[in-house]
Image (cartoon, rainbow over all chains, first blue to last red; front, side):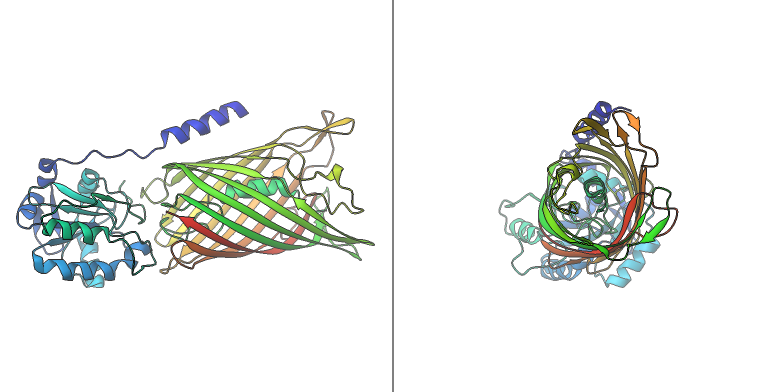
Length: 193
Length: 302
């Protein structure tokens, strides 16, 4: 293989290696998804959406330092918004995951809400989740109102961080337009295939 | 004689971009082996790496190692100023500009230095490490090393300590594979460097393509710090003068090292390492053996 061919190959890989942007998922497509939960129940997402003014899903990776760093902040957000009827779920979309494994994570993390096992990463692909700590907030109608990071911190949390998830929930519950529909996610790559 | 630094520096620079000792590629743990590689969400970084090494022996053309001759010694110093930027979601470019200083004694003492051979490198991730359980991260690497340093034939000092470059334009191409296993990361890379021929006085000098294989094993801690072990082996065939092969001029060298990264916060990190070219026959040929330390400071943006 000569030099010119190598250069052409490299440039081609660069041009073709863009991450594809996901188009927003439809309410119907999300509402029809069912996932098993660590609470022993089967969760039809459409029913979950309809039962709360906002439903939060956070994608989980047990090995990701960024995920671990955000557990306390997630707990604080849950404690602040759960009394306002916001539903919370952690989601395990990783290849090789299982309900048994998720139950052990829930116990380790002392979560007050269930983890959902997203077999074959159906939900992750539907909402465009690619990284751990990716959060999705869905309204009663099944429309995604926010998708992205919990905040703009990685593994070192700052007091003055921009709190994407908190802002989105506040805006939804206040009945105002969500100020920021997307936020950059800084977590680890999720092994979805 | 200093290691053919620009050749190997460019190889390691490009190779360095392949390595992410952070098991899950998200945070500041990336680059325990390399300074100049952007981690998963970084869009740019700048930094400076300092290297200091002492030459303690040499492999001859037959692969036999001898320690420094009595009364001779060499210490090499380098400061690499580098920057990297993400140009596409899965592609990044980096620039390294080295400053090189050599202190050499062999009856007389010589000290010299200057700008070394600059390097521009690129990396394209076809598969990001960790996004598949079964397929490793796959990245294509490419780089160009520019003869911005002072080649040996242009050195003026008595012991040529003011030589700072190879003197040849070099193109580097490689492939990197990485996979996560929990907190562990395994990385294997292969690189080939093509050096352009150059005129030295009345002759045309050329170097054979250089092949480098690199293996790295890294471990990430919960606080995002990381440690890595690195082994690389590089070799090239005989050089050429006016198209004729120079017998017994081929080169080989083995490099082993450790490095670690400590994140100060999400945007600043410190990296350090130790490396050695072990005097193990027959892994060396026509190359000096040295041991040294590196220390790096990096500022990044997401």
